[in-house]
Amino acid sequence: AVKGDAQTCVQVLDKIARLHGLPPLQDDVKIIDEVREEPMRNLWDIAGVFRSMLVSHFGLVVMLAMADSSRAFFVLGSAYVWKDLYQLMPPQRVDATVLNVISTFAPVVGLIISQRMLRFGVRTIAFVCSLQAAGALMSLMDPQVRSHWGSLLACIVLTKMTYGPLHTCLALMKAESFPTEIRVCAFAVISMVAEFSGVMGQVLVENLKENQNASSWTAHRLNLFFLLLMCSVLLCGLLTYATPGQSGDGRKLREYLPGHELKQGAIRRVRSDGSITDFLEMQSDSDSDGEHASMPLRRPNTLPNLKRSGMD
Image (cartoon, rainbow, N blue to C red; front, side):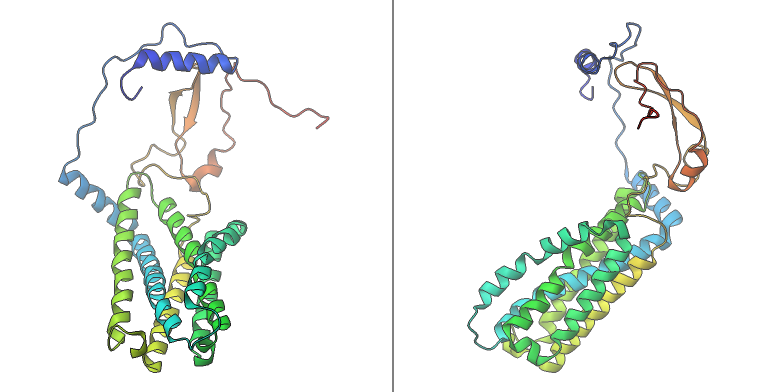
């Protein structure tokens, strides 16, 4: 249908209808032979989208940008310093390369665990992960913890287990916080700001060291960097938990900005598949779903009756 092959599209729909026991397309269905090409957007259209985004969701964009920036600083900064901690560790029975390979699987383990906790919401998961990472980083400020391979590996694994959940929770919130009209622009702006913050974390590591060698770290500067990472991940957790709304928890996505969509409760006619039966589709966002939940919708005659019997 997208390529303009309407006849093949009708044949495919007829076959799908037959497989589901539904009648084929009606003979009087009008097929548009010409494919209408959407005009390309110019710079003024793109600027208008950004202006609409800033006017309607400025506070939310700023809050999510700060949360994602603090997450990027924590993730990229800590990941850049692990190699130095392995090199600073006194000679042990376990090689540093083996420890690094073991800790590589930590983000995947964190994702698997957090997936089973989705019922608590992405905000709670992100906040708990930030507390876990802050506790592990605080332990790494002790030189005795960094000197033994077991305690060092445990702290690094606990910290890296939060990489995946934090990134996923914020990605879900960025995707569900904005209507479709500005979602891509808002997601791109927030992610771009976060990337700058992540680069600053890596640059800060090199500036705090006297040279490129891990032995150039001083205890004071290393602890100062750990303190910055702790503040960054805690800020990420607090901002994520304080973000208003229910974005990220599987809410119904909105299509348009406030004032651009159809009036609440407005109904437009669309076509169903297979039987081409008219049905009613309401345009509403997640905040007004409850108002229209009781509105009756006309049921197509071709659909089976799936009401439960008294024996169920």
